[in-house]
Length: 314
Image (cartoon, rainbow, N blue to C red; front, side, top):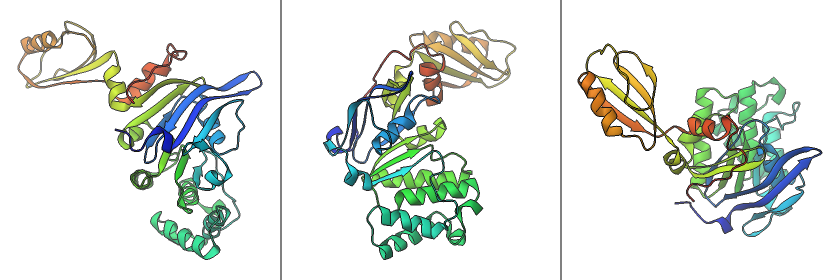
């Protein structure tokens, strides 16, 4: 169940934005309740960054409404928003500590408070040794950490993160994942985009998928997976078998001990398992819906559903 409700968080209704002949966003609806952690997915050019910039007031929509806590989002609400752009949004020649504290002051914090909060986040993000370095002297991954500190220094109520995991090593990515989850658990509304769908599937329960500026699918990941027309049957034998051809579906891999078969959701699974048993003793059988990355490819990879809007779950 979603924490909060649609009326007490971020709500985008019928958002549209065109740049000349290019339609960036076309009638998009999106909600992030308080404490909600929503993965915002789509191929390059789908309209994710335009949508996020519209929330921050950096883009003026041609149509639609954006509300926070049931009211039109305004400058005061945006000062309580943390934004992490995909492109570097930092002053290259400013030192790390000065920069983080400066952005805290821009959000309305007193200098001493901003500096104390900057120190806390710099330590949390393992940047203490680089606090006196200029941003341009940092690696790409450390610059990404500074951007996260900037987005969090003023204790925002809404977090909008555009590709926050880009360029991070595994340790930094785990720190980022943990902090994002903690912020949502503390009641912060979090909307983040990422092409790393394994991270999205691990981090959040719910996603919004767009393509060509339109909503393609939204809802709980478990519901989207269950709604797929595909199932994966995995069979492992106790000893090698010479060959096996499934009664239904398409065999995706077979190494003599393990087979993976793509089945239709309505296939006769019991018959397929019985047939696998006829080839030899079976030690393991698993039937699973597609992973999120496979769902994503089904929905937007070939473009066949780009004009169709679907919603699974709520």
